[in-house]
Length: 260
Image (cartoon, helix red, strand yellow):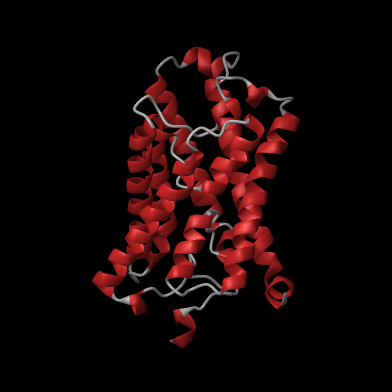
């Protein structure tokens, strides 16, 4: 339990990070999709509504990554990101475990808080706790789509964060992909890439439709991306597990920057 005693601030920051992301996603989606919302009544085009949601969530992701908490914890806010960096040897086992627990708890608390404050407005079927389920093309297509977008964002993170001239822009690249994925890919799977995000919605919605997709496909996609990066650049090319390392916050990871 030494890790818990020493690194609990980072664990709480990870919980808060995904909690904030889920609060933002719930509020923005309710504003744009709830039948009683003036925005929903004004903006009839579902593609335009998804685009607005995408921009809002992309900006939310960027804000979390560059926030003081995000700079310290690394802003994974996703168990699959944590597991991928663990696979790459950048996170110690207990830190990975507590990060993942914190992410699941934080995501669920975020949705629960919005449900309480909004008096269950996000329970409306049009919002349905922003649950992620396969689109009309089915679970197979959703699985492929989730694997592809997860592969894409992790490969981007690895290349950008480990390229000195680009590293400071990792959060911007990640946010841009989140915005694009929500706009374009959401009809196929709901756009998750994150089992903690999916479970945070599935529990209050009591909707477990093809939930295995959102646990397996993102992990497969990100692990494949990490293997491709290692084959192209070498394992030592991965410097740290932080998405934004160029700051003065402490780093609890197996960090290559400390060897400089």
